[in-house]
Length: 629
Image (cartoon, rainbow, N blue to C red; front, side, top):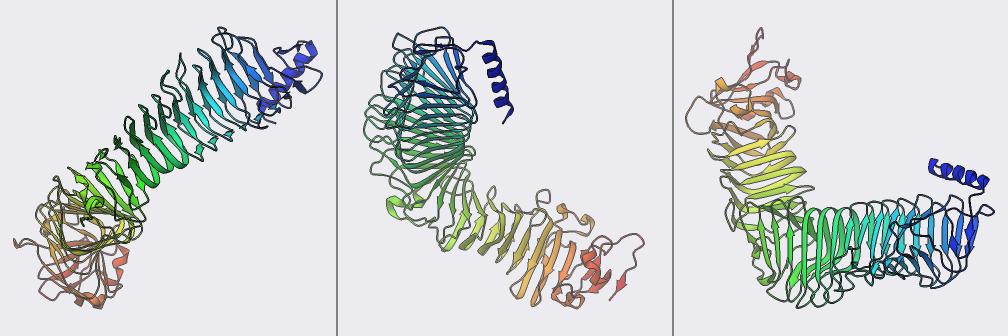
């Protein structure tokens, strides 16, 4: 038994010994009856205003009558029922009221601890937190279980509910119904544990009062049926998701009936749902802000006659898993992906929307697990290419391949273009006849062992490879361009690597492997100079690998003369010194001596004459003996 349980048992034994536990007719005194661990009531449970009732560990309270009430009369302090054992309302169709304003405002409070059970499971028995004007029902549940066979009401008829669940389980067989009270809004907070409604979520039952709030920051919130945020005419609702797992197996309506307002805000955690419908018809208002976390939509986002507005920003993500991931039959509604947000299509991609206004600005459009992503083809109203791309728009292929673009594709920081192309995860592949990376634009490859970029790449901006292997045909880097490969990155060339960069401050392949593969002849234009040494600023390579059957011809990157190449590790045909013949250079190539790079031991710190007039030689070290071959 936990420490809390032992403490309550000791307190109970002391109270029994002192004879302080008294029972009044129809009213519960402050402590349970000492004669029995089971107390049965045929009708009302009531705790006087400001009073407290404890159901201790091992105790049972059984209600066999028509009602159970905590918080019956108005008072300055709540009537509180603390449950550490079992509270069971066994009669069919027996409502349980926490805060019932029979005589004006009332304040009732129920606390449920770990190991406790509150069962209201016989027939269609509802649970009410706050009913009638100015009444308020409070739940604080840190553990245990609460089982409800009917509806769970947080506020009704002017009352308000204040439910905080930090642990345990609350499960109702019907709906979670929320209505703001006449004095205070109704709030349901899920910090941990489970809150489940097996029929629906209904927020906003009446236009008379304010906006009820559902706030989920941890645990699991699950709705089997539909979710109405702003349900009945004139009402409103607000759903805040800051964490946890939120699972809705049917449609979420944001603004359902006439003049309703539904507001969904996601800043963390995950919302997994089937459909999100904004502004169901005329006179509705639906808004959705995803500033963090992820929203997964299994069918589609859709907009009604009055449209609705969705904003994705910051670290927020929306994943769409159907071809028609967003749609509307009208020219209303807007989807804005901005300031770091991500809108992602998962598994399939093709017809991706109707006439909704979709703007992407300083944000990412991503496709995941898509075998043929149509990112440029005009497919009419449903075209992926109809998305308005503003400054700093990014396209990400996540374990995906784009449909072949036979001509060229340009990355640049201008309206109508993508500034960045991102290849990550799994086996991403880019296909185009040519790819031009303009100044201030970038190709970024990360978290993949098998990224492929086909077609010639002309780089006036940035190529970045981190935690990845990227295979290119030919890469031509202009004076304004840079290439960066984080330590452990691999750059594989089936064609040539032509470097004319003057950006020594940002160019860095000093921790990267540069591999020539695929067979045949390759050209490697370089920009290093003898005085620069083995440094990133001198355009050095972490490793130069030339596979058997490949010949590499080194040239001057800008024609200015006085060039060379510094390399940490040289791997020729799997460490074969005779494969020096694969290198053809008019200038010197320097490698680390064995004392600093043991993998170069097969070269025996020798100097090797190269076809073209240059040499392959170790970087001079004090006291090193140079062998000439």
